[in-house]
Length: 332
Image (cartoon, rainbow, N blue to C red):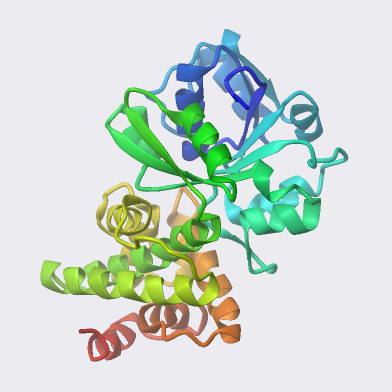
């Protein structure tokens, strides 16, 4: 199986979708691109730039077929790369009148499907009967903004079939993106969800004026907490210290580009959850992931003091300062 000769589609109009479009056009002559808003498509066609995200990236629009019809893009494509925010995935897919069973689908969504408490590949397999060997996901420390600047980044592509993961990984390999394949799909997906929760915690602590010493302790405890949860939910051999797990956690908790850290920082500075969400230009996936992980963990009862603290702040209106102060007594 090779994917470079197949018809590739990107679903989504945000920063990550835009960065992936840049990656794809390094490797294939033509892509299909689905965006929900026709006015965004019209602006991109007119200027060669996404009017809302990563405006420094210029596209040769003659190599792109745009559509705001999800059924059209599915009909015209063999490989679908999903890059829409997790809270909106169900709404997009509900418009589908075409089967996904024969498609190769790669999720670039670092979140769970709200209300279903499923990671994206599991949801596609259960709800749309896509075979697991045709499902892939993207993990690793890779901010869209740095891809736009062609700063060296690393991606791990997960698929239950290791050979297919390697083939999918080749599709994303560029001079500025190094890739590898993995068969730890669910471990990668859960870590991608949880690192956003810990980034919110890091942002809250930054907003509350906790220093670098404490942030290091928070990150060290977060990776242990993440490891406990993933091993309880999907036990297999993995190196939690690898870039797709620990590396992604670190960049999301420390980077200036992290929207989840930015969201948490606003909460630590005194913003209400609602006000912080309204002022954010992009979705903070960790807000939704926090509830999904909390609800999912009711089956496993894994000790998750950091994730629980974030959930209490986001959904139980707990005081950020008092909650983090209590958390400091539980970390080592």
